Image 1 (cartoon, helix red, strand yellow):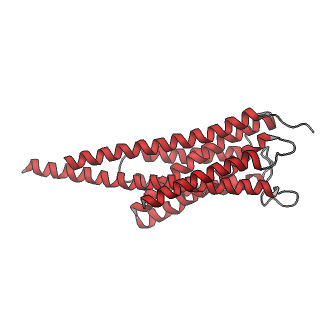
Image 2 (cartoon, rainbow over the protein chains, first blue to last red):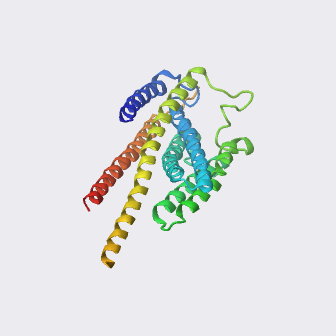
Image 3 (cartoon, each protein chain N blue to C red):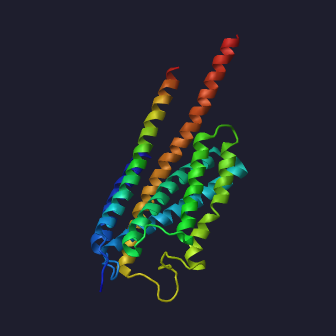
Length: 232
Length: 45
């Protein structure tokens, strides 16, 4: 397994490097926005990966509520944590792109606001997991994960349902929308690279969450044995 | 055509992406080390 992981890490690094070259040097310069549009090649894949990870969190949380599986709980935690890091990138790269193009860092339109709400929901999920104590924490977190996911389709559809400052969809946006195929290639390379990176982060965090659970049980067992020994 | 000059924003955005990912990777490594230490302590006990 370790060899496979190392191999995957090398492939990821190569893909990230090639994705960077695609985004910075190979993809054509956009006609009106110029080079700053290249933020798109990191912004869009990060958003899609964040959505995917929150979907994984939704599935794992649902599975945990039905089966009380420790593995599902660990996967829910791992996917939420990595999802938040990708969502953070979306929320930082977005304003950095908006400032030179729109002339403002931020506006409270439906897409931006719903994305911020999404980030806050999953940050609160992580705070709950980190600071709350007691046996019901995974159940409460799973419930938050399930209801929190409702915001993902709202974020996705916001630019279709509402008139927003955020551009209309370039993918699946109907007539007049679309990307130059060389831009598509850059998007897909970066999507593959960051997806592999996300999978590795989730895998490591999943293993750590399982180990942490085992460690807690071992501590509980040790203190029980200690107390029993004391009573004798 | 008037093209936006925003190279500083582009570099800042790319830098932010790598800072966030590297910070998260570092957090995972540190957490892994801490857990390994805890496990070793538990085994010693």
